[in-house]
Image 1 (cartoon, chains in turn orange, yellow):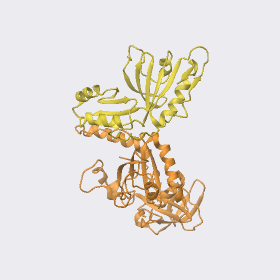
Image 2: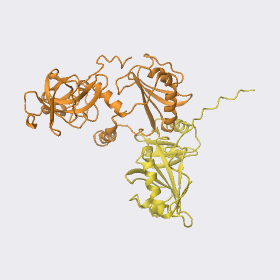
Image 3: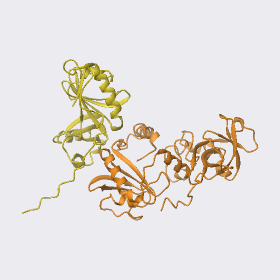
Image 4: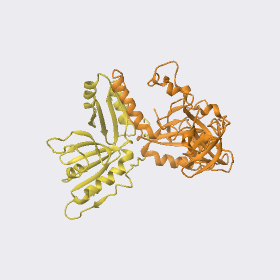
Length: 275
Length: 191
């Protein structure tokens, strides 16, 4: 099981609680292996070709390594590894995990293997921009007040089986359509800057918290769209795509107009994901 | 003549403390060093957790694993350590032996073991852990799960004046910096 870094300890603690307090009869064990593996993301149209050069004995295709696959393999002539086809950035991408003492060596081998394709290391800022472009929720949205439904992940709540939280998720307060849910926001004037933490109001309302409709949770300058873009939590947001709203930065005393849109700002057909 | 089987490839393992645990004499420089530090690397380390109803069976099975050190790490939970094994070899041996009696997890790269030894070892450790280190309360072979400088540490007394500190890899450098600083007043040697 993998989970979001910031909440990894909480997730494990939750499982331990469920085992010890709710279902002590279950024969199950768990241990954190976070530190055992050095895991690196390899992303982009040439990611498969790069990895193929160091992966042992496996011809990588869409059939052998489909989207969301996880495989135990070896690399570089025998280093045990795990290969995942997953994407945080929204491109055709993989993650490769090796026992951590080999991490540095394997990373260098990947840089060599990808040299002919123009491989480059990319950092957290680039990653953060790309995930906002793709509408992937992260820390700003996973803030402890949002439900799966708010995050646009309501389909993952099974209607066929029980799970912790199923009953209480039916409470009116958690189903209220006025709840804030994840949307995209773009400035109406392409050159305008928008800032995380700014509040969303109806266009005709005066800036004040009494008129608050939500706020911008994540903001990034998008190189693909050549403008600032945002993810935001907005009351009844999914029904308001296309609406022009007031974006109010009360801290700096500035405001501008924005458009509510789909949180997936870029590559909505997932072409790059499956490239 | 029978052909020799191809040797298993050996890949160099690099400890996270490789550039941090520099060898030499540090701190107070009068007389013998009060403490010796050594990073035990490379090691094979496993977490073994007994499954339901298998506590006794697992304890017995682990006692029969040759050439290993078995340390208590919690209720029905153990660390198993060995030196000089190939990548994954101890894991495969333990898994085969324990079969479905216990869950076995590779932690060989996930944990770092620091050996702390010498006349002042207990003095240094006592600066960090609330565990009673008096020899009467903490005999040779005993282990404790504790914290030092906000870092989770699995502490084992391995000899009269020697202890192994096992920490998660990501905390190793932080703990190393803290514990060597605590040893400065006694003078310390890094081997």
